[in-house]
Image (cartoon, rainbow, N blue to C red; front, side):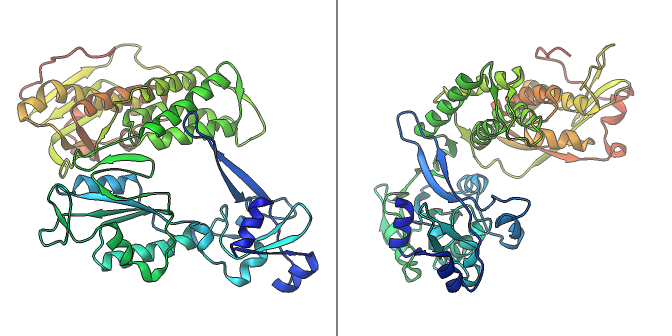
Length: 484
């Protein structure tokens, strides 16, 4: 009731009416959907964050939900993700700074088409009806409609030479780049075209309601945006302390609640979603996610059943717990330059083994008898071939070429392997273990692989993988290899 009173007092809703009155006002029958409370746990010691949403996806066979009538693809919007932020920072010159702004009541400031208000009626506990005049949280088209307004603001800012500006829902990240002719000087002597007050002033005719407490209106080289701490000068990103403790606590609570016990699909979806978010920083954690998604798939969409957590998911969650305990984890987002093609090719065949070509060098590995086990197929072998190539890169080739912090092209003729390695994970747990090891090697050398498809007929590693050995020098093995 307090929430509804607040919305009515703010003019975002009106009422309370009888059914006859609300139907007369809106010109016919109305749709009434229930409210729901979304609870988001915070860091230890902090109260849960609560948001009142509209359950517009609630429906029955006789009465479909409101959202079922909305086609989301008809309401596109721009969302600048962490990858876009990383790209801006990777290419930012020295002295670049950023501040953050938050639009207050983002969805609740976007008006609803009057003819659509009949779909957004609320009934209070006393049986009276309330009309909503703005987009509620939970409406499929809300982000698209409010996003158009936010996009317009960003475009106008750019036209007024406030750029780059990135937006994710109601959160905006405004950058400023040094300009020797700028009027605004910081403590380090850099000059800029604007400070935060001036940037907001250039957008003031729009009347955007900026949140007084959220965001950070001071331009800084280290700042927090969309849940990550970005260091522009060091070109790194990490989880802020409170966020790291929040996700660590979430993993610990999950392990405490469900180790040796049964959980629901909702429980798995929540912890999996949290870890997918932080995997942007913990790149090596991507291969520790499929065990959770595979387990979730076993529920078959049934949200009422309970299942015991498998050992694979349990072990991965323990890995995440240990990783989140480490306060020193950062991800480098330095600009590694365009992909360099130095002639790296791999191939595998189930009839003979693995072939590797690195420039004018080559290597061959013959399969042992009995190598094939359930789940160890050609895609597995192709992924092992990439891992073996990374060992040679790490111990010999990179040093000879003087390469580090580089973006390298690797050629493979297996599209399944290319997809799994580039995503950093696979549903096949054998492939997943290989991906973990090869990414460990690549991350230690700050090598970003760009896997590209090459037809088998054009792959110089193809005949080597079939036992037709190459010519020229072979890389000497300078490191202990895994079990193969």
